[in-house]
Structures are given as C-alpha cells and as structure tokens.
Image (tube, rainbow, N blue to C red; front, side, top):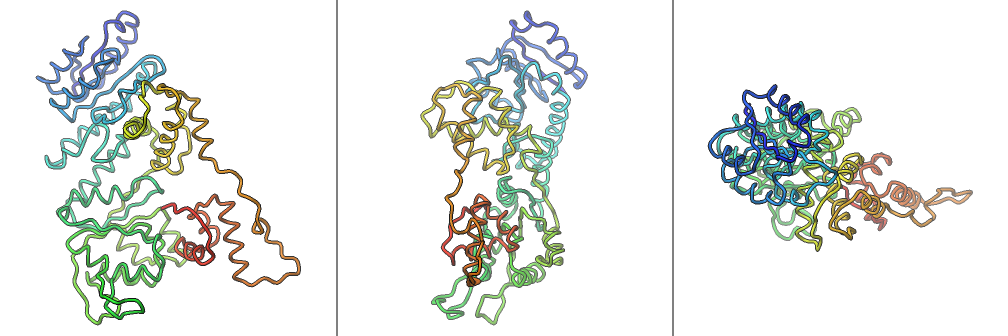
Length: 465
C-alpha cells in the first residue's frame, strides 16, 4: 500500500514528536509514504500518482474541505481520506455527502487506532480490486450504495451482496430491527440481472394471517365473499423479478407449507383456481427472530428453513460495530440539516462519543430519530454533549395512566375469557412500552396474532417493523 500524508506547518512546528511517530507507523504498514505540507500538493500528488489512502491534518482542510473533496472526486472517487484533528470539535463541514471520508480521528487517538485503520484500508482495497467495473461504481470510502459504514463487518457485507447478486440463490437476511435488512435485499436486486423488474416487498407480520395467503397467491373472482374481481398475488407480480419476504418467522405454519411448494416447483395457484402458473422468482427472506428456536418450538418448518437459508447474511447491531456510528452521525446529520433551519458549525466529540455509548436498540432507525431530535431542540449552531440529555429525555414516555388492567385481581368476580384476554393485552401494552415483538413473545403468541387481537379489542400499539 502507498500512503500520502498531508501535515500543516503549524503542527510540524508544535509537535514534531507526534509527526515522527505517525510517519514511522505509516511507513511500517506501507510500501511507500509521501509527505507534503499544503493542500495543493496533496491534490497534485493524487492526480499523477496512485495511493491507497490519504492521511490529512484538518488544519490543511479548514475552510477548503468542500472544494478539496470535489476536486479529489474528479481524480479518484474511491480514494479514502483519513482526517485527524485537534481540540474537541468536529467541523459541520464534515456533515452530509462525505463519500471520500474513510475515518475521522482525534489526533491524540490516531496512533492507537492506526492498526484498525490499516486493516480496513487493506480490506477495502482488496474489495475494490475484486469488484467488476460496473459494481465498483457503487463502492465508496464511507460505504456502499446507500449504506454508510466501513467497519470490517460492513465491508464483508458488501462483498457478500455483490457476490450473491450475480446469482439467483435464495438469501436469508438475519438481524435486529433497524439494521438495514430490506436495504440489503434491495441492493441485491438492484445489482442483479433482474434489476429492470419491480422489486416486490411484503412484511409478513404486518398483514393478518387470513389475508396474507391471498396477498401472496392472489385469488379468482368469487373465491370468497368480497372477491368481486380476480387479483394476481405477489408471487405472480414478482415473476422474472425478486420478492422480499420480511419477518418470515411470523408466517403461519399452513402458509409455510405452501411457500415451500413455491420454492420447490416454482408454481403458484390462486385461491379459487384449479390451475397453476409457473413463476420465475428470486426469493429473499428476512427475520429478526431465531428460526432455529421457532423450529424447536414447532412454530417454523425445518424443511422451509433449509430452503430459505441457502445464503445467510447476518447484519450485526450498531453496538457491535461502533466504529460505523461516527460516519453515520455525520451522514444523517447532513441529510436532516437540509430540512431544518440550523446552520451547523461544529459537533462536540464528547457528543459523538456519548451517542456511541448508547444502547441504540433500534439501531440505525433509532439513531436517525435521536439525531432528528438533537437538531430540532438545538438552540446554537454548535452541538454540545448537553443537548443529548434533552433529546434522550424527550423520547422517554411518561408512565401510563392507571387503568383496570394494572392489576388483574378479580376477587370472586367471574369474568368472561375475552375480557381477561383484553385486560392482559392492555396491561402488556402498558408495561412493555408498546414493543410489539417483546409483548407478543411474552404473551406466547405471534406478532400477527397480537395485531389481530389488538384490532378486535380496539387497543393501540406501535408497529416495530
């Protein structure tokens, strides 16, 4: 690997010991190190020579960042930029479209973080070389396509996406809610030979059990009460394309058997029809549940699991790849700032570090919501750690009002079973903070069944899909 290092004259004079250690570490991990002291030279070197990465002192970039990035992208849109800075504030200029930004590091921390940076640059370079030209355009230093993140895990995810997109293999995407399972599915479709056809997506947990079959398979006129016209199902609409079945673990067993038949012989039969139709579909499924556990509990067919789990892709939650969070914060802030009145000047490093330490159980979805609140409640163009307390406080729900469901104490009163069930679900919605997956699991029923019962008893809850 060849590295280019840009350092300011001020830093060279104020801390020559740091520069010596940085140069030594970079030389240990590269075949050649080029050092320059001004931004014009950095761009000149990048124009005429090939480098694996550029390491830059932020003092060289101050007030010139946007122009530098535009000019660099014209030369090499895949060249990673690693920025190190003094102080405790990240410039607001770094928010938004930062395709070239590979990493941003406090100067006092970069020496200890260099081994990981070297490893990721090496992996990134290998992935770039392995990709065909038409797929290489999707790769960028800060991510891939609509993905943001260049941790070792995410670089491996990009590799898996590009490899499986060239096939018609069935894919199972595993991961917590908010980790980007549908984005993986869409990316596979968009990079595949089926990309000219519409991507068909269906959330199995969002549709009641008795309607899911007709949505998937369609129906003929008169197949049931209300079927006044024939309607093709999702499988037919996905002919020659890709169908994405999200939350597959919520599908009822009898419908699982019919899905297995589609996967085995590629035929579908509308409700009320006596004929079958052959379809050419690529199936991608996803779940945030343990299908192995569901199989052990008799709630998921093992033969269907093996049919779906041909190529498994597992997405890690943000808490297991914290290195991606700073890039996500800068990217998301840039997106949200376009629709706000805030002219952001800087972000405190303490604020970013504090966000990285949050559990973020909702992953990227929760992170996005948190950053939206931070921008909304910010009164100054400088985001400090103190704003986080208000943003987190605002998302905390007040204690629910006391109702008859708080305690299921009946005394000698005999209640109808339906009333007991209603009270139990109402009570669960209160103490479970309306987390449907958690509540359904605690009640021992599927999310689809819980949604149906909530509708029957006119109870409100938030969908967590």
